[in-house]
Length: 163
Image 1 (tube, helix red, strand yellow):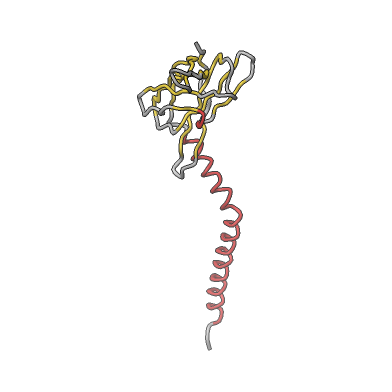
Image 2: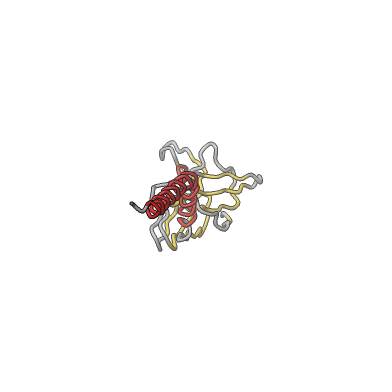
């Protein structure tokens, strides 16, 4: 005679283990996306943590877009910035105008080279036809890249008065 009672315990244990594995798989299907999404949000939030951009000055300038013989002057804004810490990919600016309106200048409206860490440089905000008519104050927002190449706009810096 064979001992069927011992076999029954083994089969029961194997079935319980299989049920647990299947249950973990089903739970993972529902939990996987929120976990990955949270990880991406954490990466974006921490991308700005190691960056410090200082907005040093703001100056209204007239840029000649024509020739010396036939000048075409455009009102632009020169902003002096310094990267104190981290790696900044680009800079966006927020311009407060004397009329009380505010205009955001994306990185494609800014010329000049973003300085490397511990260096300063002047970036020009090209106002053109849609630009700020009379800037009073500006602030800057550093733009950084995450490991996967996503651009993240960091928090706005303190405002600087334009001269």
